[in-house]
Image (cartoon, rainbow, N blue to C red; front, side):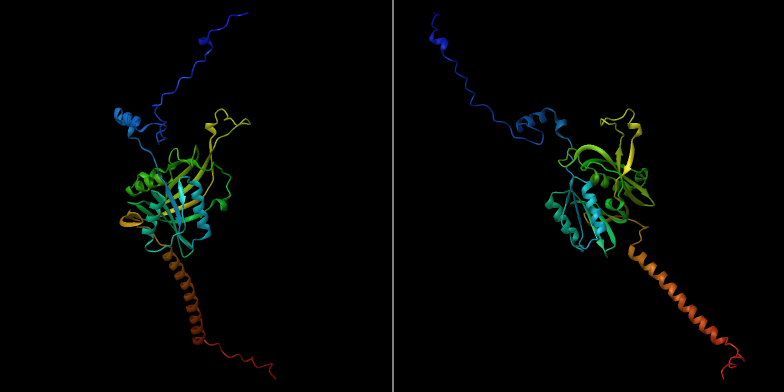
Length: 318
């Protein structure tokens, strides 16, 4: 028989109790799982790291009532292209729309706005504003072509971040520089936005031709093989495929405030669509007046030059 073990050896080792005074798990912050005191100590020790820029740009996109279906589709295309935007209900296009829009933007927690205003069911104006202090720009939108209308072959990931490219003449004048900065802030998707994808697979192109801003959207297409890997030297064969939509912006005025205020710039070459239609009507009216004058001249000529009586006119009337 084996020897009996001592009682002290058979006793199991009691588990050590955790320290009751252990600190609780810190709450999650924007900087990660860190304690507020720890973050404060780090910021005091390294003051340069605490002051970093975090882009929290949010854009509210809305339109006026009685908007045309084509312009409404353009607005929906822009909503699908901007993952950091918030779509709101229609707003009545009145003189007090600025105060209403500023209040809506504040309630939605946005810092910018794109307001599509339709007048007479045929003219589209685009308001691009920074809220609540401004500035704001009013554009006339021409040459509108939506994605559904174009049916182009380009196709990029929804919610991906775009690359913004501008033509060189944006640096020519001060008002073009201001417009470039506003477009960059509104159309540029913030980094690490919760609705955005961490990819750059399409390009927004803004170019100035004849004092108009032309917008194009292209997909960045890179050739791949069967195993979905990039071909060697594929970056050299990179191409751009247009996706849409297309439109042209004609700047009318730049205001210092949000949807109004002192005028910073006014386009001297702008002609309103009402004046263009009035000129066309005058031209049509001029054609009609020419026809009436020609008829009166013909009557006066006939009266002044009557035909001589024909001697054979009553020959066969017997």
